[in-house]
Length: 359
Length: 92
Ligand code: SF4
Ligand code: SF4
Image 1 (spheres, chains in turn blue, green):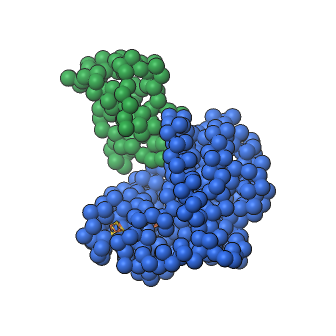
Image 2: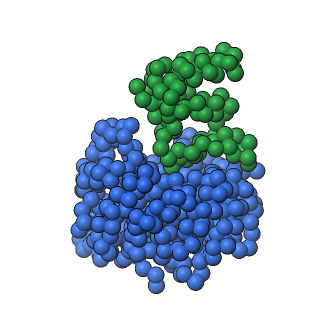
Image 3: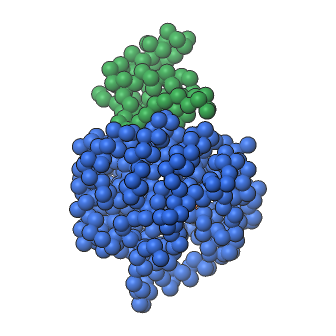
């Protein structure tokens, strides 16, 4: 039997006041009338805890758009879970935060699109910068630990030093600087988002120096731009190993981006229990362990480190999710990625960003 | 890279870190933003004594009554690992 999961990523809604073009949510967003109701989410939390989950990440979209968020926080907390609120900060007034904190939010993850008002709001598609700064102040006043999350790409990578300074100013204990991963909206916008080699060569040492300088004060997690690397990023701690995701409509995903693998039959909490899905479903078992691997991964010593890279990326770029992640230099499809880099890193005509919207 | 922790250093649980017992796994666990740590018995006893008052030396002394052969250096090393995982902070 597979080991129990540690975390549940609960995507309460896909609705969001922001329209970031780097979003990894699927292009077909779940509409409001298809969202799970309060009772169903409570049941999902119960089942996740019974299965072994100890962390519940309340995410989206923007979870603050769910009127039942306070109730759901209370419920997650009553189960003894660590409650993490993942938010854009838009709509997080002082009173709202106070109430959520008193009901048991343990930690807040706040997104920041860029270090300047203009840059931030251009990426977000709405005026969000000032509200984020205010939200950070409320979080600090309330004494909650804060992680700032910034997704990096061609439009903001040059401002990495400013983003780090901003997170310090906001009083963050952690900063996640994650280069864009190309699923969903981000894939559609890849030619606007892919950074150049010069940008990365400038940014990487700044991140490394800040990690050193801020050690013990603010932890910086830096996620590499994998298209530009010789080895893929590791897939979590392995597929179906540590965490599960429940989408707004109750779809249960082995990885947040798993809907891109259209050959994968996705289960839903309306039809089966999380226990059953975690342990017995074809989707969670598809890439567990190492048996499913083909060469070159199968005979490669790095498989214990990177699990053959990203299944979603393998599917998107090679058509078979069981293939080696094509960003790997050992993949027979690496040339696909090189061609993308060549044509999309600095396209002669940059397309307009497709802003994230419900269709 | 683990930084050494002195015997007179006073460890405390970091803000935002929750210590609890998990009935499902039958183990003490530490919950924090970046993950979950499942503790063995010794680690759980040490974490329970990281109260911002006792020093590493005090903790070793207290645990010496419970576990035979507990060395202060072992406790210092365990605390250092908890600092590394950002579960515990030390003053002094
Ligand atoms: S061949 Fe597979 S396991 Fe080896 S480095 Fe590449 S992706 Fe990782
Ligand atoms: S399959 Fe890809 S997107 Fe999904 S968790 Fe693994 S690395 Fe991330």
